[in-house]
Length: 300
Image 1 (cartoon, rainbow, N blue to C red):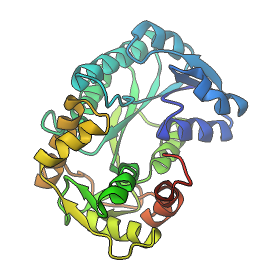
Image 2 (tube, one colour):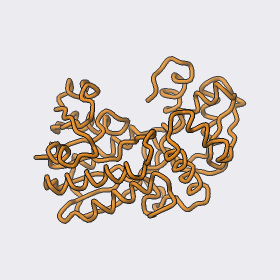
Image 3 (cartoon, one colour):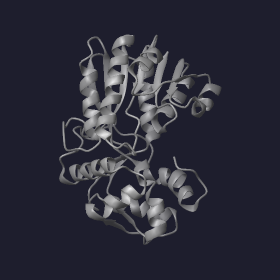
């Protein structure tokens, strides 16, 4: 049996669905089990647990041969680092108490750094805590820049006629669809042929800068002249807070952008067949962004 944290989310749902299709027994874990109904219909067992409660998670992990763990985002948390630390403490404690032999943790490029990478610092700490568990075999799947991060641009483009953000227009980053992360994570957990602790990167289908991504979006929404503009933090911070983020999260995201812009946060592996995934941005934009922009689809 494989236990999946965040089974109603972008990556966790794909992990659970893929494992079920591969014949694995899956325990889908979430705070709201009603959001796990579609997985239950596919054969999963749902389990209610709070990711900050070690005792609840230990029960959820009982009997699991492997676990998929992550730090579910809480962009409204007043103190995001404290929240992330509480979650990683609970996950590590539960894995140790339940004596789970295999774990795959969703991490990020930049998690090798102990500081100045915004919310990715929390993933660095998660990796460190899992590495301290004797006998655990763990893979830290360090993914690139989520294509889903482009989705809020739909509202921005409608309101301002252009895409905006904190990243340099010419900064190429490895952009990846979360479906590809979930599929790879499921494959690794299904095989369970890894030993010790190891980090593996996923770079997506190709590296893109925001000008290139914006051009793809423009073609898909019939705005071929759509432009991208990098804005200063002083303009972006209040906009992020207005979108519902806490000041803590807004500051962390801007810190992460600076880490990317400066090159402090970057992939460690060269691109290869192993860390390249199949979904191109054109497919993602056509299937997710365009329908969201026109109001014909829900946010992914």
